[in-house]
Image 1 (cartoon, rainbow, N blue to C red):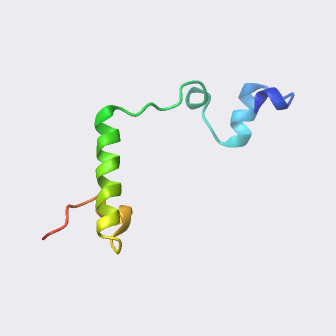
Image 2 (tube, one colour):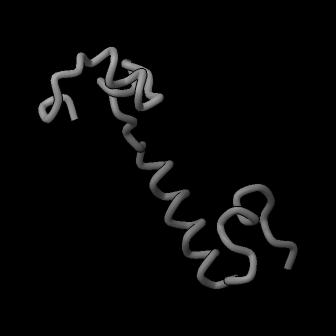
Length: 62
């Protein structure tokens, strides 16, 4: 984004509603987080009615 405009990094981040630290250091997923995300997606596909939002909090009671 900064390469396409004449805005400073500080101003561009303020306009985008993003902290400068988050802009400079994007989040990196750990292997545990990746495995958890994959499992949630797998369960959401099996239990389509639940969806990922309902699955993240409590495990199904079957």
